[in-house]
Length: 452
Image (cartoon, rainbow, N blue to C red; front, side, top):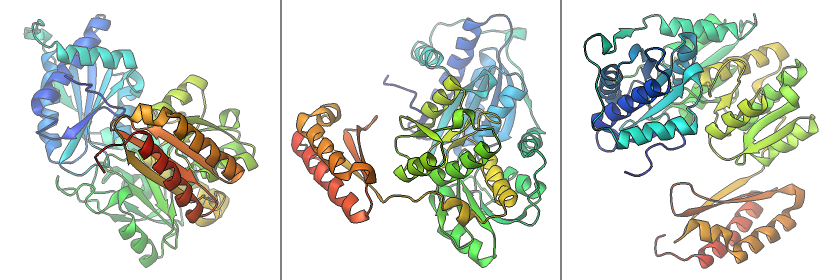
């Protein structure tokens, strides 16, 4: 079989690409791998899911697979991805399994695995699990008392909200009106509860999941309804989550979007002021806007860049002990409180800064002046060869010299498709578009393809 795990677990069309048989095989392989690596105790796994309909079927397969391989299973039910990661650590479990396709449409689903402590699986463990899936025949199944047991965690949501509120260190959101769009997803219960218990006046949208309506014209990928609701309710701000609530975007009182770059800047400045920003450093991906870097430089904060993907942000945070990192898309990681991106945690701390500073979200977000950004995906015959072609490198160098400090060029081959991504930032949208199209033309000429 081809590579099973992507940068964010296994994902595909439920019951077509991601079948119950595959979910069962992954669960068995994960439990077997854990037992082979540590035979001192029976492995314990926490399983949670988002509310999409296929999650019921896939959860049944995963739970059965884990128990059949001898693991004890703690079933958390519908729960945000970061909540499952937290529960893994809180219960001293060896494994976390989340069934979710995050912001993807309802027909998709996915399997995301967490290691002990709620951290991303190390690459070598992920590789071992994938190898065990490929070689699933012939293993000796436990019988009798060796079969794993399954029990529910009925207080999991409350425990998670308690944890989130504890991170606010006594800050109250009294007097703040917030509209939250939960995307009919995994945060539909916990997000409104967390914000209300923190003291906010909460207007909740899209908090009635029926298994089919997750991410359907709502949530962090569809902000128009949230914008309108914030203005209509006279709210101070709005917050939008995706299907599994590992990300957070916001809108101001007048409905202007505040993206992950701006949220990171707000939190970084607050943490620096309080002496909690380790090394006065923020971790961001190469896709973060140049405006973020400029704003951080002006305030004495260094920005460390990683490849695109929250797993690379997490790796850098853990390796260097930094205190804040994230992506433009709204995946924000605060390692003092969470082992992965947590949208509800992020929103709480964003709102706490609005209250503590006495400034509006729009004022706080204005620290970042975003440069116009244009992204062109160029279809090519060989993405690596096209990106490395001498004429392409020359075109990029020429554009970088012309832009100087007022813009930048990022050219990278896609990790999954025969595409070269050309991203340009400049002082005007027209300049960004012109430079991006010029480089894209050179890329096309360097590696022509019949696809458009």
